[in-house]
Length: 206
Image 1 (cartoon, rainbow, N blue to C red):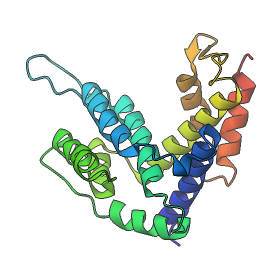
Image 2: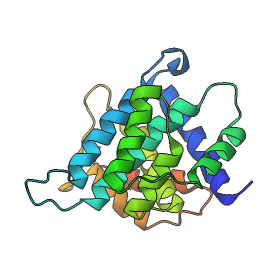
Image 3: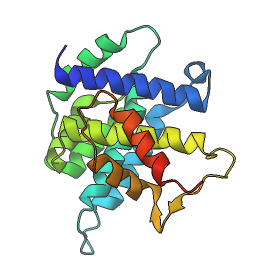
Image 4: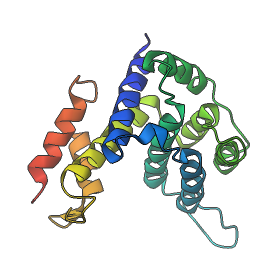
């Protein structure tokens, strides 16, 4: 198994665990993951900038965070309850290694959104094209994904559903704390996700 496939297996496992935490029978609920993808694509365009009638500078950091969110939904679409994570990872690895490009990032993003709207699928090749055009590597995706997934778990464990979760600690939003924690850790560590969780726990005021 390639290093990228191994990272994809970890992300698939984490996605299933997160979906199960939100709804134990998530698999039989028919959640519209494809819709979440195209809505995120539209939100991302606002961060990237598309209005020709005013000056706009792409907010690259925010775009990368949105791509990480889309990958959560893309993985959820691919998990079918039958195919092993190893097989799914190999398939995704192959698609991600053959990026599909349009003339610029915005147009490539529209290919990704169009597949979600028209075919209700996750177009991993177009996703890889977006990654390349924004300067994002698989390692960046892994770091961002594991971090965000762990933060989502942390939020669920600390009252996100009942509204008791505290979003801002010591004058910073939890996302900002997450970035600082992730930067302080070795992403290749086998317990990377656990260390991220512990890092958040150490900072959380609750």
